[in-house]
Length: 402
Image (cartoon, rainbow, N blue to C red; front, side, top):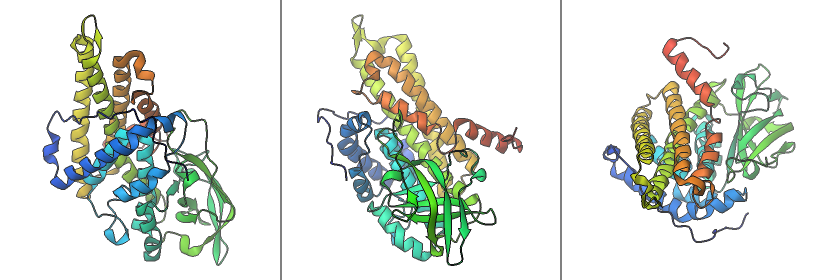
């Protein structure tokens, strides 16, 4: 386990929340308490150290246990299995606050909750649920999710990773790429094709013979997140490790929908942090004998930022209501994921300009956020793929092969 790096100790997180349309009035007292609790944890335990970890490309593994204690892993999972049984707006608020600190830390939570715990919770046997979910919820175990392959990203149906029925067990062969949490994980949910070419969910545990988890280095994005490969060379998988409740692409795609929902809220957290930083800096930075906030072009940037944030807040809140009512469609989730990352990227870039040269330094979070978002805009469905999902939904015509 990595030592707890407390950073320089000089950083003070001065973030203040911005709510131009009073969307807080939509929240329950429980929602507000959750938001305040997670925000305090981020200010105390994430933002003071995250720049050092990102600069050094290190994963703050000590935060995993803390995140489990905070209930950030699988909060919508039933208390019977170690979750909190919370609603999806609570989950969204958590992801917003965590990603306001860092996209990589939110990625850790999203993978654990939406991509590892969710498929076990939704499609696993009772034995699988009782064995894995409490350990994952508490942060005792870290999990990862294997869908993307070196040659198949946006087209998961083309995967070549496969399981072969050997009678009393399966043999798993293949590989997965760009897997968050992989090098530090104790278990994984893998998607592979069976002898009939049907996609099945497979639970692996670290240490199985033939299963390796090499780390990917030299990233310019998500530098405080751990990313790796998963390689399977005749891995012997017990038959009880197959998820019994789902077959086909429905399994992994339903996981991605939950993850994309959390990302939509998370990206809003980045946008809020960049806007808050730029607004405060613009009020304090003096040029030509006045704060730069008094110049028209700076006000234009700030006004456009808060407008887009406000629109995104309304979008995520409504999506959360639909999700709680089990009425949120995959296309609606795609729209929110795509929109909120786009506005967050634009806000980060405009905020960097307001800060001038200071915007590229580690004294401020903006450049780190901007680099992180270059991954977020690609994973869990690329920017353009989400556009085509919306296009197919409104026209009824599939343009993916066009």
